[in-house]
Length: 319
Image: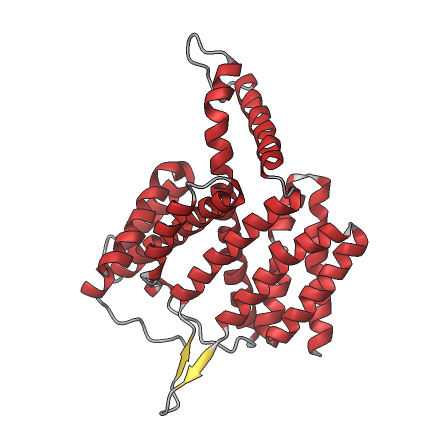
């Protein structure tokens, strides 16, 4: 049963991955859901089903597209999904028979790491020559800027030409691209993991009790990794790219824990619902402003233990 489920999940994941070559918006959405079948197989039938999904998907993509595409599928989609699902179901039992499941905060730290690896792998799959990589990304950025100017989304300052704008902004945007990619990858991993876990839970196959997510906080090692990422980001080449990607992945992780802190500290308060609705609406219309504030809240919570000072017991699990 496990091999059959795993192979089926891998084939579905391969299909979702492969449709991105059409370039349509729907294809991009389906590509984002490519890890979902692997998560479902690994969470519902154990990690061996996930490994079968990884292998079947890699072979299918290699045959349908190319061997490099199969490697990209394995490194960017399949193995990260399998590894995160494997960690999510890790548990240990103490002498009294109580089971302690892998903490969500440490799981998020691993998700940031896998997002970093996937970002670097995607760049290396493009080319192993860093200058060639920069040139490709620079052309994409310049074309995007030109399109934004033509469509009047971006207005040139008086006396500034489009070439001057590109010369001033492109190097900064090229440097920031891995940050955005890693942020997107960890958001996608998180969304797929939640959806897969909820689906498996509803089917009654999830071995792990559903955790109280608002209690999630990152361990303090995340702060050390952030400092290390900032330091490594100053280097050139793919090493610096890895540092930028790590910073982007951790910033999103801190944003999620900052949001979790608001959910946690507002429990039982009359202003909870309007506050949370306002936050989520602001995340849609003012994402560039609110996201850094939530990330700062997550960093302060990790550094100072804000929630421990106002600790509330988690609600009893639902029957």
